[in-house]
Amino acid sequence: MNQAETPAIRIAGMSVRYGRRVAVDAASLEVPRGSVYALLGRNGAGKSSLVRCALGQQRASGGHAEVLGEDSWKHRTRLMERIGVVAEEADAPPEMRVHQLARFCASLYSRWDEKTFDVRLGRFGIAPRARFGDLSKGQKKQVSLALALATGPELIVLDDPTLGLDVVARKSLFEEVIADLADRGTTIFLTTHDLAGVEGIADRVAIMSGGRIVLDEELEALKGRFRRIRFAAQPLALEAASFRTAMVRRWGTGTEAIVSNYDDLTFERLRTNATIQSADVSAMSLEEIFIAVTGEGGNS
Amino acid sequence: MFDINATDAAPIWRQIEEGMRRMIALGALKPGDSVPSVRDLAQQLRVNPNTVARAYQRLTEHGVFAVRRGEGTFVADEPSQPKRSERNEVLRDASNRYASAAISVGASLDDAVDELNSSFDKLVREHRRKV
Image 1 (tube, each protein chain N blue to C red):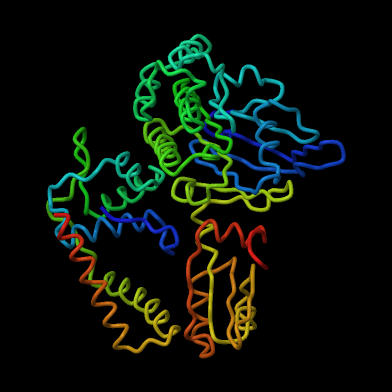
Image 2: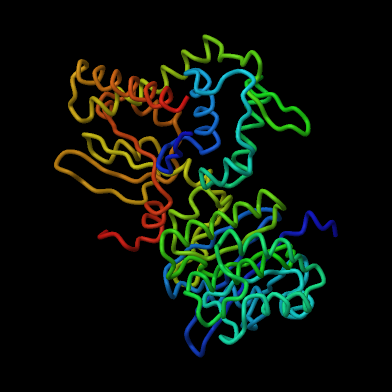
């Protein structure tokens, strides 16, 4: 099969059960090559189980996972050479110095690029002679990312890369991801809570809730179809235009609604109806859309 | 340079395109000036480089930018202005949205025009400062 056409990750009908508890429920998704794909979900939504199975670190109870065109479980050893992973908790022997870690990785990866590692490390301001155990949580992640980038991977998997990082560390981590994209176009798959952080960076997002993938689409399309609309009339006006609502709230005689299939043309037609003339239509941030889709975090 | 607003209804690539056109129209970028590389602007605005590349491609196709191989991207010697019909369409579209927002909060036409004036002044001033 043509390499460019096989997705970087393909998960089909994957389920993960722990005893009677279902952590991942028939999840399917495809991560296109060269994309930045963000898997969003609250704690316990099933993200980490899904990622571990995709990486062949754990065997799914059902379904199928493929990475770079190969079965993630059967070919897990071979695949590790082609994937860079930044785990939720970056881990290495605390006594080892950063440059020793780099030498160790260089011996494992045939495509190891020393210069990439030095440049990234320099931008993070971490001394090569520093002991891993003395680094802060954020610095450990930065080292882990620099190591992952230097192995020349076709795919980078970041499991909650900004968890526990301060604003500055978060910013420099995403900047490094952007720089790598500009340089090489590596496919990036990340799970995150940091919705604002991935807003401009992700091409595609999926939302996981209760073990299920409830949404999987291009970020631009997603942001294009969600709108918050406020107007001084009954909600019926929206139904007449066949708008689907993710949330409806009444304010006296007025209405506030979140519409999930907005388009300008339909709305302009609706506006000619005098009752909805002075509607206020606003675009929504990824965070607001996330809350509307999962029905979580709000008071609805 | 300019800011990207995540809650703006316009896609990010369009905000970049408009931002660049605005800087040229206000003289903050002059014909022949070099513009930041895709990589640098992506890092500065914290957006996906593909998004910046898309905006640059459109600006190049429309004759606003010129690419000199090996040297980078520059503002064209005579950057093309949007056609009058295009400009009117953009203005009508944006003013519909603005008028609707103004009416919904009960503002008078005078109030709305005052706000528009001060926004206009502010943007022009900001760009002048950066020249």
